[in-house]
Every structure is written in C-alpha cells, then in structure tokens.
Length: 109
Image (tube, rainbow, N blue to C red):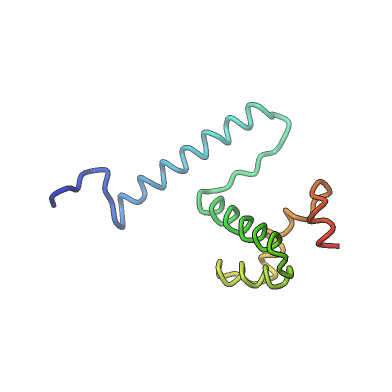
C-alpha cells in the first residue's frame, strides 16, 4: 500500500516491535538506576504496569488537587482501570501514604 513502510503498524506483529523498544528503554534506565544505586532494590515495571501506575497516580493527584473525596477518586480510578476500589487502594494509593508527603498525610488521616 502506498505510504506504508516497515515503521508503520496498525495491529498485530509490528506492535511487538514498538512494545519491545519501550521495554528496551525501560530496561536500559532500570540498569542505569541499579548502577547508580547498587544498595537499593529497584522494582522493575513493564511498560504496561508503568503506564497504569502513571495514569493512576495522575488521576489521584488531580482528584486531590480538585478537593474530591478519596472514595470518589478511588471509584473513578477503579472504573477507568477496570479494577476494584480495594485494588486501587492497595496498589496505587499507598504512594500517598508516605511520611514525606505531608499534604497527602493530612488528607488521609
């Protein structure tokens, strides 16, 4: 077909090439982090996990900025990601329960 080449893809096999490039970059940066911080265990996420965590964190932060109740934020994220509210709390909300995040600490307590 005119205009298409080996770098174009819609569905199927070529997607894996794109996915593999993302995974290669993530692996590269995880390796660099481990070199720089050899005494710290780095939790390596796949591109899918990285995207989900980023999206959930973004939605959580935006909900907090808008002053929405946490249960409503959890519900929105659960609906968006196709998870339960409990999974959202356990998997993503823990990021906002750290001692270093005073704003979230005040909201969560």
